Image (cartoon, rainbow, N blue to C red):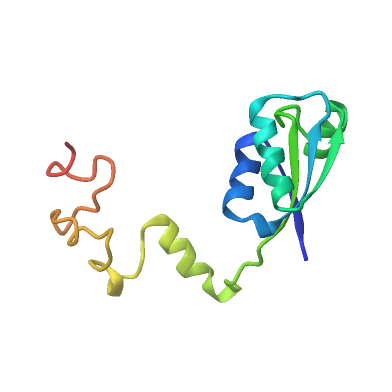
Length: 131
């Protein structure tokens, strides 16, 4: 199983809140004792995670940054379900150039938002929806 480290209060709290099963352990700055860190520690303790107290220099080394805000987490990396054959479709979707057969369908299409057919509804896409 592949793993990665994330850092920063918001990133680590989001992982604990939305995908706690992915979080394996935490490193928290030993000297830090504020309300936000205490809330994070309470959540981690409730989830039964291993918590390491570390010096700031250790957190700098683990995260590869001085911007870790006193917390680093080790997570399991979710395996991608897309294969190499899916790459053209994924790139087209990311660029907004999906095949014409799918044009005009879905909640985000121009038809469903009652915009002119030639309009994608994006930033400065046509005069009718640039309001």
